Amino acid sequence: MSREIVKPYLIAKDEDGSFRLTVRETRYNSQGYPLVTATPIDESFKSATAARTHAKEHFGAEAGQFATR
Image (cartoon, rainbow, N blue to C red; front, side, top):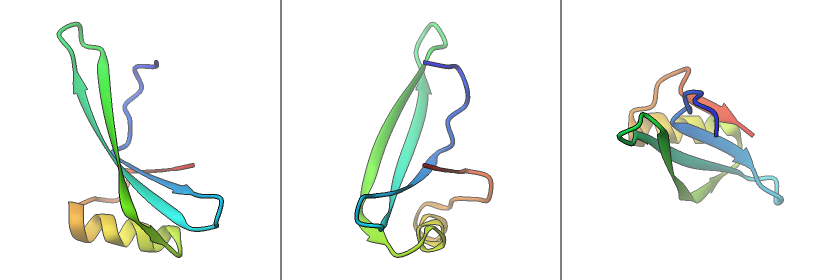
């Protein structure tokens, strides 16, 4: 695993063409190794913009905190 900082919000397109939002939390163990917990949101979105808007309204997300896949 790389020591690259993980963006806290992942937006991924699923096989149905819908967009899914995953909230990721990064903690570090006693040796400084990152431990990432990913929690997918049950709701699907019609666009990546809708997923971003949801994250901003419900989780306080800010620009630059999103990764896409």
